[in-house]
Image 1: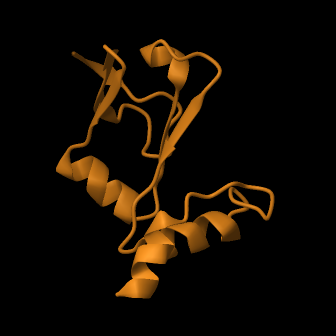
Image 2 (image 1 turned 90 degrees about the horizontal axis):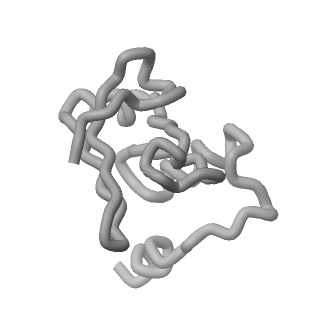
Image 3 (image 1 turned 45 degrees about the vertical axis):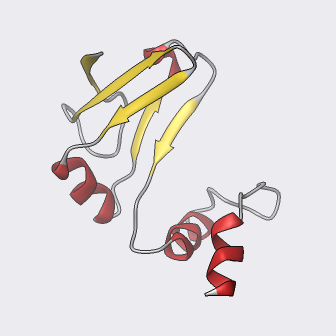
Amino acid sequence: MRRMRAGGGAVGDGAVMIKARGDGVVLLGFSRQNVERMLADMAIRFNGAEIGLPGLTFVIVADETEQAIETKLREAGVVTHETQVDDRWEKGARRA
């Protein structure tokens, strides 16, 4: 595992997070500062090639609820009617 600069992230130039890959596992380490930035609507984005997964772009977001995250992504046009969304969180929320 090694510290790497987050590439192209909306968290700002020089933002650091831990990224590692090996044995079928992708590990992402978030500091309190990373989490606070994500909660302030600043997504973390990086190219998968940085961890040996070329052709993929990772975008990591956070909010108070899964519904709030989906709403923001839809409003930003990231999630559209054509996007396949894992809605297991929504099914669990309906039972609660």
